[in-house]
Image (cartoon, rainbow, N blue to C red; front, side, top):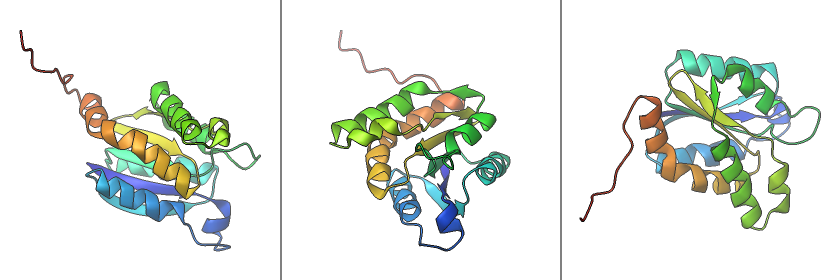
Length: 163
């Protein structure tokens, strides 16, 4: 699975501070069995859409973003992602928020991240914190291979019948 990690952060892109969540995301994608490029650090807003479109053109199986999912006026990653998606997968985004809340982070329910498919690429938005990335990848990693298989026309995995 070829993966791209994208960090959406105006301040990190401007060099105000170092991107911390992107490297964590890239490491966790590698641990999930992906060959990873990035993290690519871009300002939030239209640069996110451009990076996603470039990723689609490059044929990535999965693109995971970190950052830009909050409530501030500059948090536009979900809107930019929706411009690219052909089909949303609301269960992923719902599970990510629920896992964060269950981990004792009440503000996890404020994340507006989305997930879905564009072409043959799975795109998932994660929060911009390192903890949010860890919690999110704990949810995403176990289903990543199956999701990519399904996007590419794979059959559902069926348990062996003992009867």
